Image 1 (cartoon, rainbow, N blue to C red):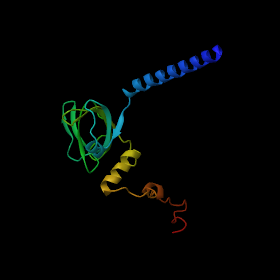
Image 2 (image 1 turned 180 degrees about the horizontal axis):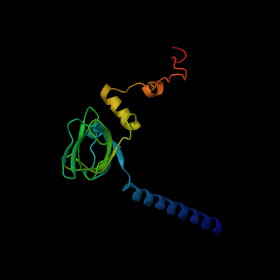
Image 3 (image 1 turned 30 degrees about the vertical axis):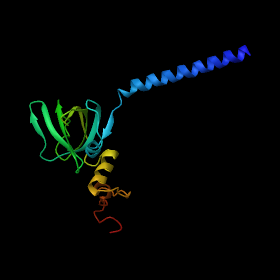
Image 4 (image 1 turned 135 degrees about the vertical axis):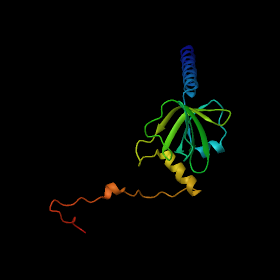
Length: 169
């Protein structure tokens, strides 16, 4: 009987120690978690001030103002907007009408104080979350899934070496 009680004691101690270790890991990881929001999601959900987050959308036309190394601009999802303040060097692809993700802290004034700004890398790429959010917000409802349409570059015809029109035309 003593051996059985000792084994049960070690088993309970092991589970308790494992639970505490997992709890400490989750507590430590919660400080480094960064959540992604669209401007509409920020308007609907209150977010704790001084919490690190990412906001994705399109740079609103006419919103970029530069003052030395400080840049003020607005991110929109065509329904709501979030003003952004960034000090630093912007990516080369940053411009009005371009998709961006700004990472920073939302201040009491409602301005995102960004310490990182990422611009989409070419004209055909938009992060899936941002694209779905923009599509849903612009249509005012959940959009049905649609098939992708190839870009003009993918459907371009190449003339045959003999100079005649491609086959099938």
